[in-house]
Image (cartoon, rainbow, N blue to C red; front, side, top):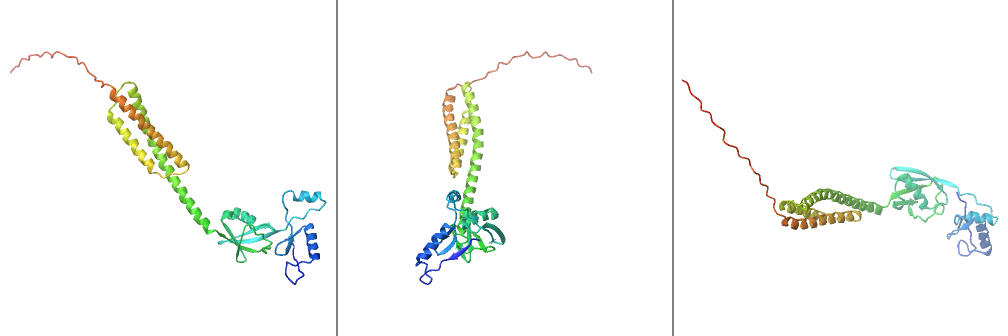
Amino acid sequence: MAAVMHRSSSDGGSSSGWSEAAAASAAGDERAGWEVRPSGMVVQAREEGPGGAAAAAGMGIPPRPPPPEIKVRVKYGVARHEVAVSSIASFGELKKLLAARTGLPAADQRLTYRGKERGNADYLDVCGVKNKSKLYLAEDPTSVERRYIERQKSAKIETANRAIGAIALEVDKLADQVRSIEKSITRGSKVAEVQITTLIELLMRLAVKLDSIHAEGDSSSQKNIQAKRVQKCVETLDVLKISNARLQNVIVTTKWETFDAPATTQWELFD
């Protein structure tokens, strides 16, 4: 655990009235690898970045020993976890370790120590956390509500995707029929007008179903794609209906071959 010292002030306890000797001592401590917190507590200084150790070595200052590691006990519901963490780590860093243990995202965690919730920027040593200290972990109530809303949104999206997928299959079948009618009319074969009007009616029903689906994001894009397919099929059928009306009905006549009546035979009757 990092060593901790308290400055004594020249005015009998106030941390605002340091003497020149105390200030000089503080500067010496900082050079030796200690830093003074706003509360007047002197702790081992933290590295200021990845180049801190290299810069110190370049200045001839011996490298500081790594901070000691402590084990804290965290209660989460009925479960208890013992986590090894640096003694000068922040509560935010501790939450990341707990996320791997509990499955609860760090952003959704609330850590309490000595009856007070601690923020991500608070440091363990500053708050008095020591080896074997007990902390309490709880889930942020707002995160529960947020996840509920997200699950509801995901369920709606899934429902919309299923509905759009079912309509897409129906559009595929009707589009095949449209192509079949188009081939027949292109070859000059007239089709029954009821076939065209029935297809148009079925396609319009699908358009109404698509319009009733509430979709967002990717689902909305898929919905628009199917709506355009339906519209294209209806427009094609409208054109085919006009072309089909111009075609003459094909009357098929059959020439029947006639045969003479068969000869009859006279039979003689005997008593």
